[in-house]
Length: 423
Ligand code: EPU
Image (cartoon, rainbow, N blue to C red; front, top):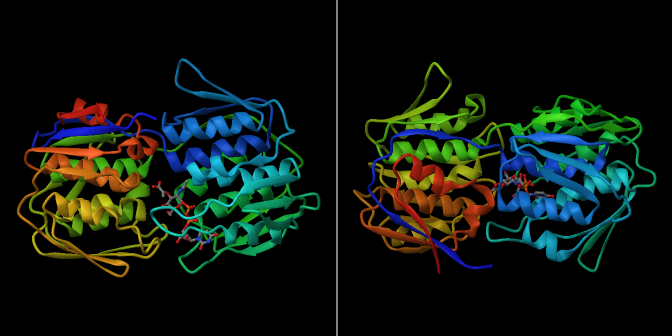
């Protein structure tokens, strides 16, 4: 893969409308759910991202055909059910591919999926996924770096999914997907409440599943014989929406963020307001950020409906410019702070103390070369680069391409000056 960087000329004012794409973290498990489904299905609002393209390739290897239609929708259908293995090479590159585990176990009765290992944002085990599938009667084994599941005797069960850092989003998705085809009733306690879990449940119900309570900590699933392909539209990406709102506030710019779902942004907007910013809703539903004066605020990331970890880095970029000292605490990934060093290279004044970042606001940032380390950290560096004086080069922006659809095109269309350059 050619290494690509962003060259950002800071300080350009933003103005105009920016559209939010479909949610990455909804799309990925829903794409995996295709493994459960008989007959063709069509998904709308699936973002065109590296992670999506990569997952479609994994699904192709597992016998799922997919095609992007002219109108942008994605048609999918299972054509071959013989494959049951997801290799280390695949899962290592994208953790969300672990979401094939539940569907393969339920539909093909066998799965061999590589243990994903850690990544730059933390350890990220899958013990809760394994516990959940075991509670549904799957025989789970770990061998040679793989988790091997035998789902021959899958049936409904009761499982508690709370862990040291709260529930698990993709773990809830895995158990939910397996339970749809497991005979009897499954009760998931301490389920993740993220809108992406609700979206998955809505999609599965559209295809004939019997799921109630999704979006709450208690999900009940009555197993059905089969699921049938239908049309479904993925929810908007709340993290992308929050990232754009921060861009507008940092640049004191009157932008309009279109297509976002306000209901999914409550904790973000609360924190935004504490930092001296506001969001108003235009008559056509567009969200408009406003800022009088940035002030320091304290934020703790928590499972939904708490403040999302996926917007921690971007909010930190904004708070580098706030008046006073902000304290940002990570309760989901205590080590998700690689962006601190890079934000400091741009003139930020941030110190890490355990799972907490202490941000002393500065008057301004100045451009420098910085290194993207993970998806959300990269977005934070792009935001900081927009606000900094002079030129910022963000190295390794393939991270940002994994989860933001055409981010530089979208931002340039509202006035940013971002160039994609070969390293
Ligand atoms: N955890 C366990 N055991 C498990 C599973 C998780 O201890 O079996 C821990 C994790 O280590 C972490 C916490 O529980 O400390 C929450 O992890 P979770 O399983 O909820 O994360 P995930 O499902 O792997 C999804 C998103 C992440 C997002 C997290 C938290 C997808 C594809 N990924 O990951 O998104 O940060 O939930 O909201 O949905 C991103 O988009 O940049 C991203 C990393």
